[in-house]
Length: 168
Ligand code: PNS
Image (cartoon, rainbow, N blue to C red; front, top):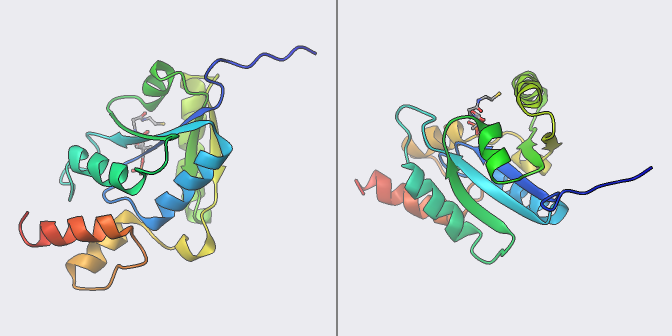
């Protein structure tokens, strides 16, 4: 049997809205960075209608979090994810699975993406158990209602959230 490895065979994309990035995302990104040669955290530009952070702010925050990791790149994308992955010559899409409730949506997306681009594989990873209940939506809600989010998001996110709350 012959095997061939594409030049960028170990580049993965971790796509998402990241509004904001949580410690659950951070956990998955670090796992991905250990598994793949390089991982691109790809921020969707036109996702939610009224995001808390602009895509530029989300990119700046994630870059700040991972500035010490040379194999973690942060970028933006718009349009079809598989088009972006193809353009970047990635071989895999990484997604996190927190609970069974994530499964159906993720399964549909993975199979649709495979239909659109059969050469790109979706790889699922589970975050550490203490992050399985985290979501960007809940973080925003808790923060906006005055709850404590430290330990659930990187310190940089907390700082940027405080700036937003102060009207920044
Ligand atoms: O963090 P999220 O919001 O769960 O990420 C969802 C995301 C960005 C991965 C998904 O909405 C996406 O890939 N959007 C790009 C448009 C696209 O390719 N749609 C078809 C996917 S099957």
